[in-house]
Image (cartoon, rainbow, N blue to C red; front, top):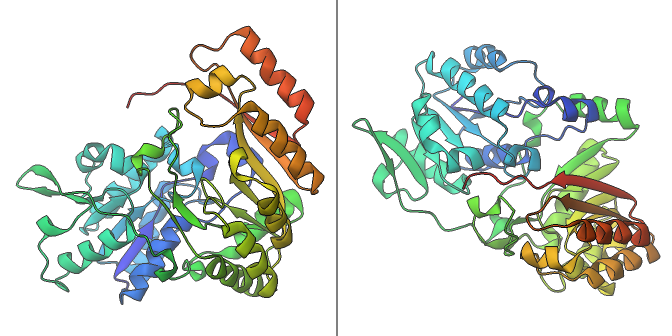
Length: 389
C-alpha cells in the first residue's frame, strides 16, 4: 500500500494563455519532495495535475493507491505556480475536499499555503509546511506515523490544528547542502505525455532542472520574500551529473533551468561549463540571469555547456525606474550584456515592466530606445500590478 500520495494544483488548461502556449514542465519541486520521502523509506505515488483535466480526477488516484496521507506540494521552482493563481487555489481546495472524504490527513506546502495558511486550514488541511519543505515534511510524517518521538510542537517550519486553533511553529533554516538531496523522482511522471506535447507544438522536447534555491537581491516588486533572501547552490559537478543522467534516460532536446538567478557564485559558471563537457552532457538550454553577473568568462562558460538563450531582467531603460525598483543594476550594464551575449552567439531576451509607480512617458521612451538599440531576440512584457502584502 502507498504510504504517501503527493499532488500539486497547477492545471495548465485552467490558464488559457499558457494552455495555448503549451510548454508544460513536470512539477520539479514536488518530484524533489517525492525523492526525499523515498530516501526516508516511504512508498510514494503522484497525481500530476499539469496535463490533467479536472481536480476530481484525484479521486480515482486516491482510491487506487489508498494512501495513509495526501500531500499537496506545490512546485516552488515554476514561476507559474509561484503566482498563486486563484483558480489553482480553488482546485487545491477541491482536491482537499476529495482527499478528506477518504478520511486521510492532508498536508499542504508551497508559496500560497506559506502566505495564506489559514485559508487552507479552513478548507480542511490538517498541516501546512511553511517555506522550504522537504526536511519539515519528512519530520512531520515521521512524527504523525510514530516513526519518531519528536513532538509536533518541536518541528520547525510547520503549522497544525490543535484544539480548534492553528499553531504555527518557529521557522526552519534553509537547506544549504543541496547536493545531499536525491535527484527528482522522474519515474513518477508520464514523461511521454510531456514529450508528445512539446514535439507536437515545437518539434523538440524540453525538460526542467534547477541548480539553486532563493535570491539574495531585493527587487521590491518581487514575490520572493515568501522564501527569504537566502541563496544556496548545487555544485556544478552535481548538476552536470544530473544532465548526463536525464540525457541518457529521456533524450531531451533542451533544458530549462528554472533558477531565479543562474550562476551567482563567482567561478560557478566556468566550472559548470567544464563539468558539463567532461560529462558529455552538452545540451541546448535557457536560463534567467542578472546583467551584472554575465561577464566575459561567465558567457564563455555558458556557451561551452550548451546555453542558447539567456533571459535577463532588463525591466526598464530608465535608471530612475531601475533605482525605484531597488534593482541594483545600471542601464549601461544591460547594453553591455546584450552586446556580449550576441557576440558569443547566444540569444538575449528581456523581461520588461511598464507602469511602475512614478514612470513617465520619458521613461517609457528610454525603454523603447533600449529595445531598439539592443535588439533582444525575445521580450516578455508585464504591467506593474501592486498586490496586498
